[in-house]
Length: 64
Image 1: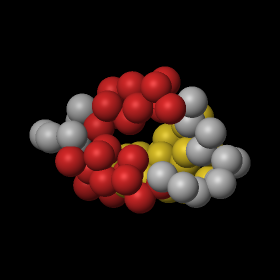
Image 2: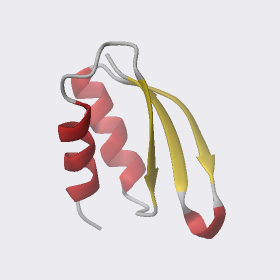
Image 3: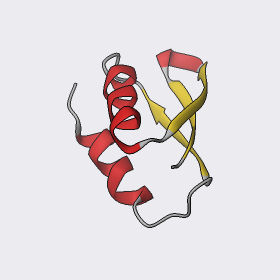
Image 4: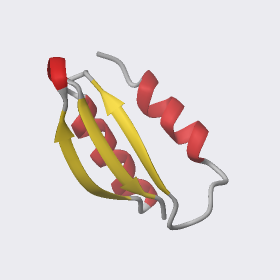
């Protein structure tokens, strides 16, 4: 229940070219809201969200 995964995502994707597609996995229920907020700020686009086993959500994100 913390923003650390979102902050790590932001750091690891900095400098990647626009249009790069990355996947992000989260098991934190607030992760979806935090990731959507980050995407609104940065211009990234969430392509899809899939629920995996054990409540893990897999996001496909296209970087701006």
